[in-house]
Image 1 (cartoon, helix red, strand yellow):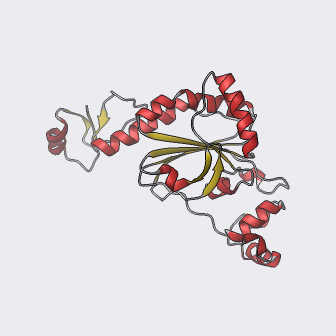
Image 2 (cartoon, one colour):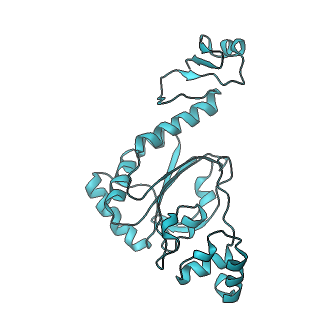
Length: 252
């Protein structure tokens, strides 16, 4: 349907500036078709529902919300196939598959290339990383999902070529709410251990009603939220160590 919208309508959208960067869109036909149909981008605030989409992946076509089901899910993007930093990242996440499985977390990657390219690239990832990629990778050559999730570098939006996809991480809970986002430039590889640490923090907070301090890891002391009184915290957790009236530690 989007391809049938008259070009003048797209021009009207740009003139109206309903999307702040619409006037800078590249001239690539795929961009014009996509943005003719989707004028305004969702607001991806923490706590908002992760936008749904359908896409081809290395494990077949998916409906993203159906893919999530009742699991925690990590969606992470990559600029392109056969790039050095991306290859190291996917290998690292693949090696942590058992750790994510133990926490009930699904992983799904995205790279801005066609499906056939992904299949060939996975062979390199497995070889270089001494692993086996088990999670699907979305084929997003037209950047439809990348724009839906704002995974785009501003410096590339006004160029003639299709815009660059940055390294984004979205942690989504079983209710399909976005709980955390991380954005890295294309030049900087992520820290896979930090992604795992954040999952532990979020799941611990949800289960135990606590918050976690700087550099927290499983087994460290946690913080009693300001909304919980010290007597109530003592009843719930036992010993409470008060550093300041608003900073109280306990063990779980």
